[in-house]
Amino acid sequence: MEIKFLLKEKILLKTKYIKLINKKDFDKIMINKQDIKHINLQFGEIYKQDIIIRVSFRTFTNDYIFNISDIFNNNRTITLIGSLNDPLGIYNQGYIDNFKLITDKKGKIDWYELNNKQKYYYLRGLALLSGVKEAIDNTNSIIIIDLSKVKTDLDVYYEVGKAFFNSYGYFGTEINSFIDCLCNIDESMKKREKMPILKIKGYSNFKKYFYNNNFYHDFYKELSTSNFEIINSK
Image 1 (cartoon, rainbow, N blue to C red):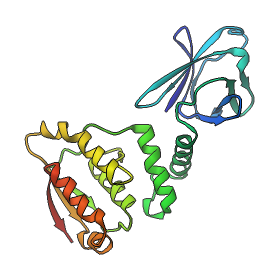
Image 2: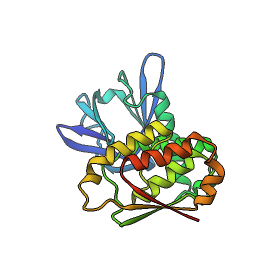
Image 3: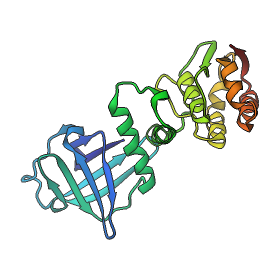
Image 4: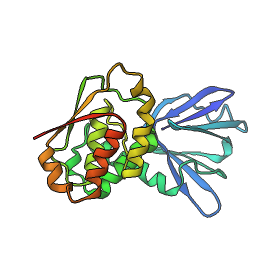
């Protein structure tokens, strides 16, 4: 996500992360200065002028108008106080906050060190930040989905996203969102000369943990419905 301070379309400040805090009578936007990517904000020069605050996500953009008197600047943060509609909502903001917390710890996360709640936060945060993609990045004729370590369905969704996308894209958190993600890539897959083969690495482990679960059968059914050829490999 990104937030920009604009004065007549001139960018005064740009940041990569915001925290939205719901209060009873107003909402507060807080920007950590360590997350600011670009700043040309001179408070004295723009006093009493309206500033557009543009909050941009992959799937939508919201604009808010603020007076400079609603902006408070201290050593560590810039805080905006005013009446606005929170574009994420209090629960979704929690997913974004936790996604940032998890991904800030390491350059690349160790997925299997996370607990189930953290895994869910990661996938939901990824969905909110990058949206549901319409095409997969992987152009190989055989795509390997590594299920040799999976124990929960969240592990499977993560591994599918990791196999399909260079950027570890979102591919669901439960079976219905998994199906939605498959439907979303259908058109782009039809345009390929040949559908890639999906090679399930670690099939014996996948079967061990999921065979008596409806998810196991739904997983194969939905991939087959999308015309993927599947090869199981130990």
